[in-house]
Amino acid sequence: MKNDNKISLNEIKELVTNIFLKQGCNQENASALANTITKAEEDGSSSHGLFRLPGYVASLKSGKVNGHASPKVINKTPVILKCDADNGFASTSHEVALPLLAESAKKNGISVLSITGCYHFAALWPETEFLAKNNLVGFACTAFKPSVAPAGAKEPFFGTNPISMAWPKKNDHPVVFDMATATMAKGEVMIAARDGHMLPDGVGLGENGQPSNDPKDILKGVLLPFGGYKGSAISMMVELFAAGLTGDAFSYEAQENDNNDGGPPKGGEFIMAMNPEIIAGSNWEEHCDGFFQKLSAIKGVRLPGSRRHKNRNSDQYRFINEELLIKVKSYL
Image (cartoon, helix red, strand yellow):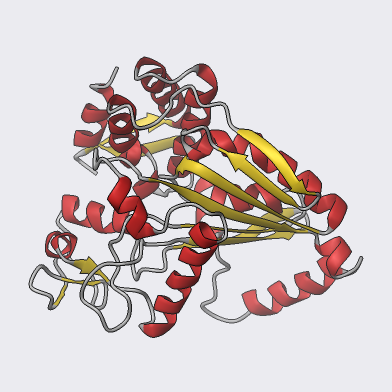
């Protein structure tokens, strides 16, 4: 870690908040973004932490994103909520809309939220884990600009199109997964290119359309969906949920409308919350706890999210790439 600097999570949060305040955010938006970035660093998700900050700042500098966004939520029905992000980052909409989604699902058993006109540049697990901590099952997905080829193709059409699901556990961290429907998230490929790491087979095709293990070559080419046609179908599902079902942009539309400033494109997010107490019945916790115990007892099995939670419970310092930290501090 000779090229990394040790910094506390509190220092990261303060640093990021001050940067966003200087770059055009009001306190509400700066705090929401700082919470999101700090949570990513806390959980060891470096590809979605400070690594993303230059893209956030670029979007503010270009005027694409509203740093004073004031999201508004309406109830189209008792169980269908729609949030207009006011051309702001998704983090601010989450702080406004997720408590309302949770309240609706607790009362009605199930509720869905569509966020439109937002700029999503973070991990998805904060949304679903928030719901799980409210004893709800959470599901979320969002699209992006094209970087993934559908199965059988060599040209990008889908975004990395992540999905996340969180399941509550009694007196314990929820079970959470957050994954790109590409074989590897683009941010992780970018970090591998920065750090000089080669990638495993199947991540993507190089500039010449042939399989490659070089992240720099893949970034000039195209990523591949995980599991071939199966991952491709799930990536298509995300497009339909995050764009078709919200009425916002498909990945190719996001590409057409973006100013390519290095930040995220405008798009939508689909989030669903379900109340197992109503849907499954009062014994759902014990029933599912037995399932998780059986699964965890299998040699070699690690429940999704457990590594992040272990990082979260470690000390409050993180090692940040020195060049990245210098660049981040230059925004002050």
